[in-house]
Length: 190
Image (tube, rainbow, N blue to C red; front, side, top):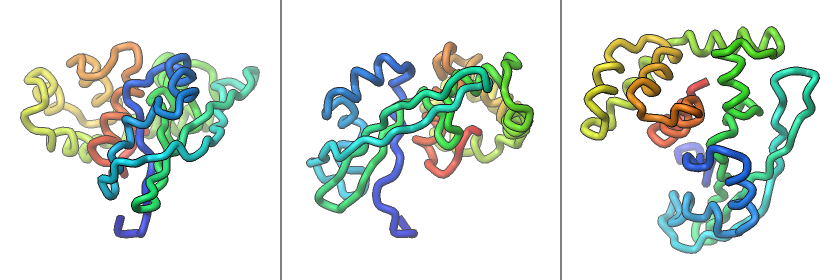
């Protein structure tokens, strides 16, 4: 808000696959619950504004890119425009979280520089992320609180929240990324 930014990105944490996304995008009210009331002015009237196409790059050059339609909502009260991104799409990475997980954990095929960059990010300190999670306080399970004490890197963090069953086991990166974005929008998992 200090930079005059109105709106922003909202991650729909419950949308973990493309089929659910297709159903929600077809209905103007599908994603409205994620942005209503307005997060900026608390206004109740949020309009389905328009769509954007997001190109999702594949892991390997042999596969073809896909596009995903993203819904934008507009608040007439304050002029804010919110982009609602389904949780299965990795924000800022132009890929699905499933692709990022496969490359980062199962050594799936990807460009060498991309793999190196993602592995480097997973090896970075998770101190700020852990601090944001501890800010939740009493809402953390005892098991997760104990596991977070030993977390040093972002990979350790993914392992800890997966072990504590705090995120979906079949989509740990997507679950954790949405959780982190909700806690502090400027911080990213990757």
